[in-house]
Length: 336
Ligand SMILES: CC(C)=CCC/C(C)=C/CC/C(C)=C/COP(=O)(O)OP(=O)(O)O
Image 1 (cartoon, rainbow, N blue to C red):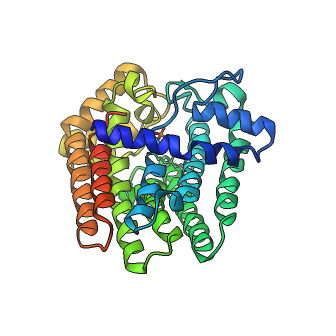
Image 2: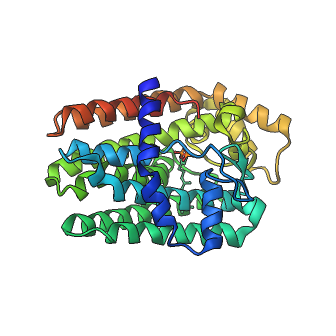
C-alpha cells in the first residue's frame, strides 16, 4: 500500500508543472477557483496541502510506460484526464447539492453555482487544448479518445439524474450508468498514454478494457464508502447519497435481490422529502441486511480480477503491468 501511495504522490508531483502551465491559460477568476478546488490554495489564495488522490493521472503515466514509452509521453494525457475529472466533480457537487469534498467546502457552496459551472467548463475545454497542443497522430487520437470518454461520462450522469425519478431501476441499468459516469474516464486514463505513444491497437484495447473494469470496481467501492466510510477519511459527509435517496449500486442490489428487507428499502426510497438522520441510518441497515454491502465489495473484487486478466496476456512492459495491478488493488481496498 505504501508503494502505491508513493506512486500516486510521485504522479501528482510529476504532473504539477504541466497542470500549472495549463491553468495559466485560464482567466484569473477561474484559475483561482480551480486552485481552490484542486486543494492548492485556500479561498484567499494562500498555498495549502490537500487535493485528490490523482489516480487517473497515475494511470495515464503508467499507460505510456506500459506501451514501452517514457512516462513524459503520457504527461499531456495525465493532465487532460485530471482536468476532465475535476470538471465532472465541480458540476456533480452542484447537481447533488453536496457541500463538502476533499475535506473542504465545495466551490458552488462558497462561490455560487456560476463559479462551479464556469470553472468546470474552463477545465473541460482546457483538457482538449492540452492534448491538441501535442504534435502528430497520437495527440489527435488522444483528443478523440478523451472527447468520446467525456460523452460517455455525461451519458452516465444523465442516467444517474434520471434514476432519481424512477423506482424500477434494474441492477444492469445501474451498472451501465456506473460504467458511463466512472468507467469511461478510468478507461480513457489507462489507454491515453498508450495512444499518445502510438501503441498498437491490441495494446490500447487491452489497457482500455482493464480501465473500464477498474472503473466499475472504483464506483462500487465509492458507493460503499458513501454509506459506510469514515467522513474524516473520505473528506465527504457520510450518507449524502442515501439522504438524497439515490439509487447507488449497493442500494439497487439490495432493492432488486434483497427479499423482504429490499422491499422495505424500496418503499423507503419512494417516500417524498428529505429523511432525518435516524431514517437514513435505518436505510443503511436495510441495504446492509439485504446484502448490498457484501455484494458491492465482492463485485468490486470480481471486476478488478476481470481487469487484471485483460492485462495478463497483453504485450505490455512488465514493470508497468505490476504497477497497474498494484493500483487496481489499491482502488478496491481504499478507504477514501
Ligand atoms: C457530467 C458529470 C457532472 C459527471 C459526474 C461524474 C462523476 C462525478 C462520477 C463519479 C466519479 C468518482 C467516483 C469520483 C471520485 O473520484 P476520486 O475518488 O478519484 O476523487 P479525488 O480526485 O478527490 O481523489
